[in-house]
Image (tube, rainbow, N blue to C red; front, top):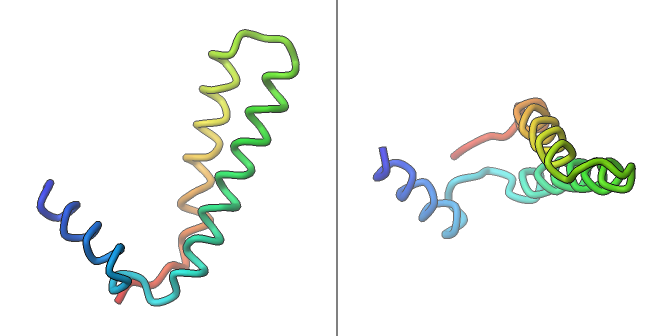
Length: 74
């Protein structure tokens, strides 16, 4: 399993894994920005930091498959 992950990582850095890398990085940036904004907004509410971290991580993780459903591999 680690070999597959290592091979995929090498292909990603060589630029041979994704057909449209700009689309992939754009979608990941959207999800990350949304998660960070949610974290900041919830942290400003005055609760302990544990709850905003958990909720923003869950929301970001749940949104990733929907944002990356159209990613094409080579």
